[in-house]
Length: 253
Ligand SMILES: [Zn+2]
Image: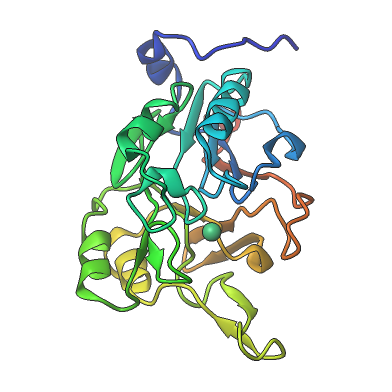
């Protein structure tokens, strides 16, 4: 197979080429600088759900963008996570304008409380998570501010991408204070937004490395796409999700 070095400029023609019935999505998150170790299965869309940085610097973002440019996926969607500190005016940002950081990502579609439609499917991405150690995109847990952020998710979202998990789904990790106790740390307010209102086909997230894996709940596929393990070893697989059946099967009775 030959890989094209860059995403073609005329992406509109590719949008039409996809059928709603069949879209292959390769999902990863939390590569923490080890993106070159991640498996790259064949797919139509690559999604990175945040924390691509180990140490977030301009040079690192440039290198990450160059890596993205060399991948053959027709569409690449990236959101930021709490470790991608140059993408927000947070206390760990040494004064880089987030708009400048975003502009360095020329080889993907960067989503921040925004959406892109591919093959008739709406992908919506958001980097925010309940506060944890004053990193980027932290918002007070259970706050009105966080509720307002989830209220922005459009009703017709098909693929939701957030950095953090919803509460109770692939969000378990040891308590910071008492390492023996395993607790759920996902966002409580994201749960009703997903199950009672948006009901996406697929929700991709990461952040809690211990929860890496795929599961279905109430007709929705949930993917914790963390590539890094709890010890920051980039050994988890890239997760493949196919929405719909291949066209030849779909036309059979
Ligand atoms: Zn994270």
